[in-house]
Length: 75
Image (cartoon, rainbow, N blue to C red; front, side):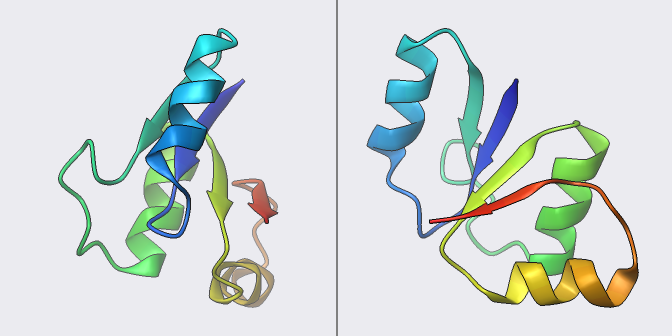
């Protein structure tokens, strides 16, 4: 599984996922802190990553778009 951590997710969480063998990146590591929510969804979709976030806007954006990907986990 591949994960993308949004700004509300601790970089430590991403590090823990990596320690468990997952392919996980954080927006901060990619210097993408200013990326729009739609572009974050697009990045997750293009890279086939599960988006980890605390931002409820992502669920709404995904529902409005009618897309089934990417998967979004709200914590």
